[in-house]
Length: 109
Length: 113
Image 1 (cartoon, rainbow over the protein chains, first blue to last red):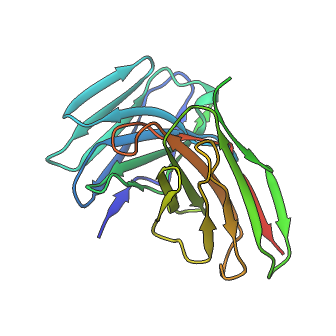
Image 2: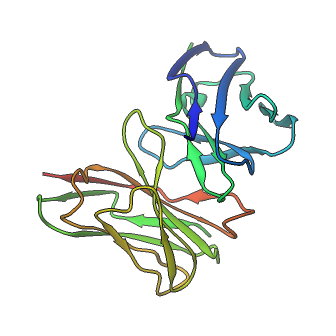
């Protein structure tokens, strides 16, 4: 079956760094997506990885290892507005996104 | 401003009634999608459409119906056959289903009483 695993909840301190992990098992692979979702709002696109390695975009970076079926989202210099859920999704061989349940990130001052 | 709109934000219906959720986009995207989000679960695909007048069932299509008569519009009807319709419904669109990122509308929270 297809499966995406990510931690349910994480807590971090304002100004610190946090890494949110995601492991995936999908039928085929056409890329790994990260989205941010504030409570009651729409998911917003953060990053896309299809090749192994690190993609950096400002305070956010995303890493992919295809051989391990593993990705992480790295958030630096955390701000209170980063409190949100972070959704990991893998695109399978039919170009369908398979979604994890999301990681709720709580930022404390 | 280009974007995706969904209306209404909150919707209440009595059990046994059909209800239609609106989704409109002015991004000139070919592909559109409907997802359902429930607490503690990942988004689940209900239906998707790659082009006007064509649509395909997703993983949980039972009890739902869609139409795609115009490129800009992809309404979702939640029928009385859907056993547990209370959920957060998200519409998304992308330029191409295979190569482009999906962008989401603000969502409609449906509560069936």
